[in-house]
Length: 200
Image 1: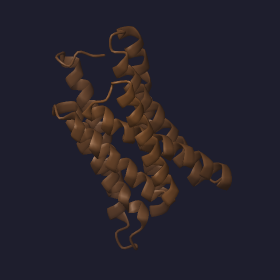
Image 2: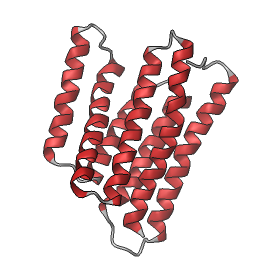
Image 3: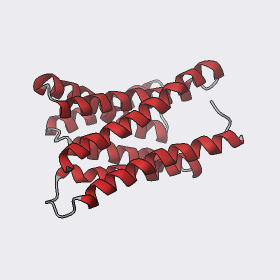
């Protein structure tokens, strides 16, 4: 893992926040460009990007990580709502999160961040699984975009998690870290393309 005391971390943190800011600006542009059109569920992508933009600021510049994690939970819940998830998907996410939380408790690895991340991870997994299922059923471009974006989000966040757990192994941690940026950027692009397909 990178030493946060080094100057390079500041540049990486700024780049991270700027990537999300560009996504927020573009989604806002799509919203205001067609403001005469009737509001749609997908307009919530603007709020989604606000959540992850603020979360990235907390992760990068403010040492209150748990707020960033909570904002990502809200963002992924919003993503589920945007893609019209069924009630059983929300229940499945809660059950899976509870199972992860209890497992961590048994292993004596539970902390505030880990408890929050239990449900964050469950939302990411459920979003990915049901996006894949929806594409298999519909086989359309919209479903394909959401499926790929969900898979990329899973890979990016999994890479972050594993990289953090393996921080003692600098080489392996940094190697996994290479997956974070391409997948994160592509996921943001695809989610905006998904929104664009509904707004234009």
